[in-house]
Length: 362
Image (cartoon, rainbow, N blue to C red):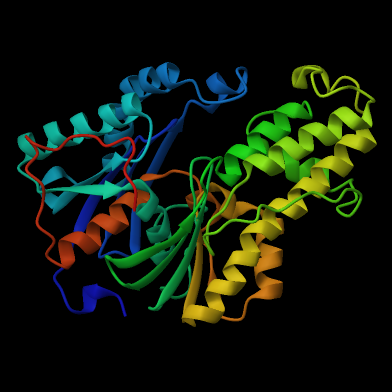
């Protein structure tokens, strides 16, 4: 049941600048998306095969005020209609976070609005709580998740399993000790000569491949819910070198020119299957242990169709994903979590004291 039934109407502006998207959104009562604006510098980073922090920060500086202005314009609201500001203060790139946080602090002070600091990773989960949308081409969920809620958070920077007993009452069960799954996708894609970002392009290449062509390893770790993708990434490198009859010291950036289209497709399909199985294997164990009412998937990799298929085939609880457009970084997830902080009487931060935390953990 949306908390708006119990509380007065609450409208929160969310600001997100943790990586390469400059985003702002306004959410009402933790479930109604009123406006959502995202400016990305992805094209600038693509030629380098990954995010360049300095480029990202410069793009945020250029985009942040126009994005917020456009968000307000599309919402048909004024500053006086808002009840607070929520902003990502970690985890993320230091320069990127700084632009969003300093902007939010200035707006909080000048507009006399309470300020709520948001953990970016936790924010991803709250994209699943949006049930109504005034934004074109964003289809919200039919119902909000129920607690206890098991969350799989997967992106270029994070791979985590979290059990939520209620809002803000959660336990991090496990996470990656090295590469996040999204980062592994990017690196394998680069090895195969596929464009950045790696996730969607690995999926495209894998459609023409045999997922059972190559047997790739899954890391065995002491932590029941922990992940490691570094070994899998190295196994793909060694496989590609062997396929073109090259030694282990052969440069990875020269492999794609020697691999055939069939070899690339088979390697992509085998990597995709193994990496997703690594995630889903842990979720199967977690579901048995915690018996959640809802399982939510969040983060950029939540858009992966192989992940959705394997979860659907192997889990039993109700599965929930955000709209595809809300899987990657966005202001809507930040504003939604900000709404719950405001509605549940979390004390706002002093805007003069808020600092970024690039290494923030859940």
